[in-house]
Image 1 (cartoon, rainbow over the protein chains, first blue to last red):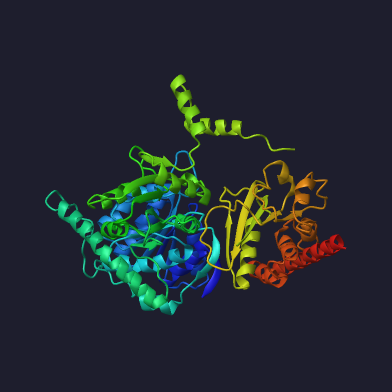
Image 2: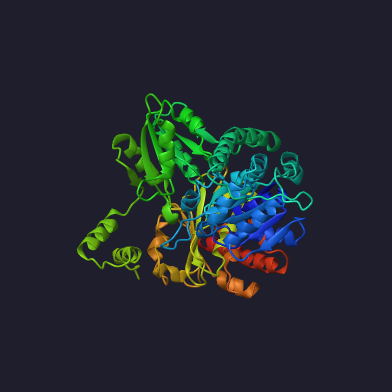
Length: 420
Length: 192
């Protein structure tokens, strides 16, 4: 049913349709509306046979989900930013134990300095933790990915993180098709655990494993992710049959067929990039886009096929691995490595801490990549004057003070007071 | 695509206003995208919310930089931020005030817009009269329908009712109707 609805509430409705049996809730901006929405659905009796547990921290949120999942319940939680960091140990435990928990990540920057706005730093911090990580381009896709996530998680017996851009998607109200219970029930079978804590058949989960077996356990986790590379497109195709919409999959291309330049990106910025591409196509520039949906497992082969034959690849990503550059660009580079004539790779870091990524800036970036490519990592719309002054200051004074506050002071100086 | 930017202060229902406008457009079968300016929400702090309306899917996720219509819920903002940034030359301006554009020192801006595109409406007064609280958002949406004819008043009323079922919705609808009427009267006068 089509609804004009906030992204978070649409996700809450979709998650409820998946019949979770345990929901662990702890508030952190910008995912809070999702668990609030689920709380309402439980309280109103629309979501039945579900324990809605208010926990005392993010560490507890995922720990309780781990316990619930090991006991055979379909378990769900959501977090963002520092919340994900606070549960980091449990994040590794959930995947290490092979528990099919689904978690929404309302993508948000990580401090310090504290920042509540959107970027992908939080997801990137857990990219090697052994979860599947799926990125939603739209709120419709966010809804659909959650339904696919439970099916993937339970088929593979591994946890799935659905990454949704904080505020940009979670707080946007738009037209979203909410599936029916019948559709979801037809797609997602009841949870049938491969391992379960059962007093009737006692077993232990999470034994100590020494050097004799640890490599094999990790190998099998990695192997499962390669299985996911096959399952993700299968389940996406099955979803399209049931729901009549193409969402999910490993990646998808937009106006890529004859493109000299292909942009690679993840999440909601792909919409703005598509509009920019349409404008540039009008001017006769052959440019296209590859949207990465599955970041973990990383679709190396599919991406290599999608990018082979183009001249330039521009990676636009909302995260920076300080000291090396963009994580997505690194992974894209790895996918291109073995091509006989690989395209030139240009890496741009954009939208950090909620900075708007505009069509105007993207136009400039794509043009620059083609005519005047840069070395290393480009920071889109970097205020070079402010950065230069701060570098100069820190060279001059040993006790130069806190960087963030210095930058804010510098910016305040350059803004003229509003006219009377 | 028609883009609306709403300026106000925390507590004035700026975000809800943008959301209700998107619902009104949705009721008319159009695509609409409403989103807030993503600040930390505090009472009294400047708040911006956006609403895009189009006949096809809206993919754009940048803030609204060149609005077709500005709705200003709080005229004290003119002194604090550049409310008019990017306003299109053929755009609309709707200001909640019981003063004139001249008294607000924004006469030149209003005059640059096409005739009849800039109006004032005492939306807070209408809200106090009907709702009993200084929440001008519903009234301003009624005024918006009158000013731009871009959505029907009826759709705005349905949207208000969806957001606030029951009595609160009814009194907000009354405020929206009065503001709608007020704008139409003003435009009649200026056309005469």
